[in-house]
Image (tube, rainbow, N blue to C red; front, side, top):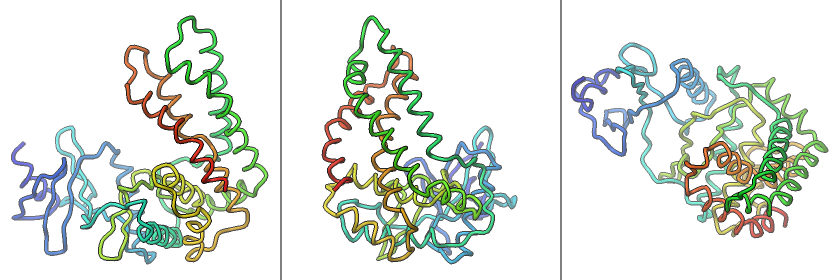
Length: 319
């Protein structure tokens, strides 16, 4: 196959450039800036959709997003054996620090500007679905899991933890669905789908790059057409779970609202999405989808951490 540090740049049309291998990626320095070549498990059709989306985002006046580059074959990927590679713009800088107020302010302003960009008919290979339907399905699954665990003769530590805490989390889930159903969430969602509103879908700290007073949003692999309030709520939940929670939630929402005014009942929708027990549901699903002999030890630790922090989290999102 040859030396990938020279072969990959060549396949992406970069003649005479040797890449540097860094953390599983190949970094290329060009006259137009740095670029990163890395493996992906995405289907070529999905990569094409993301390439077109990111171009649309830039054309809509938002320059602070990922950018994919075409290969020498004029496609946004390279197939090499059984591997697929893509090349994206590499922005220098550091990842977002949730406990830095200036970082949070800049990230929320940037997110609002991204959501404000008007993108015409994004071609994303995703199927929109109402969160109320997702939540109802997950609540049903939790109830089913509880019944199955109740019939188990020999309970594991996780089983005991689930039985003890499930009633509280079921109430939170049901309350979130009830609250969403009292708002105009469904109407806003349907309007967003009709308009082709794009969400990033994975707003973690590592997907914000801070550099010289600018903030870039990266890694759009989970981008989807959806109500953009869900993007905002996901990011706020990330802050509430992983920071010292020094900035009031209302102030964070105002930082976004100052750039992109929020619709009526936005606060109620965001609150419902914050109280829904996403992490409890996720960890429960992960645990019971595994064979008992192959349970990752980290699941127990993550569940215990969630339970330990729940009271502080609830106090923050409800004040």
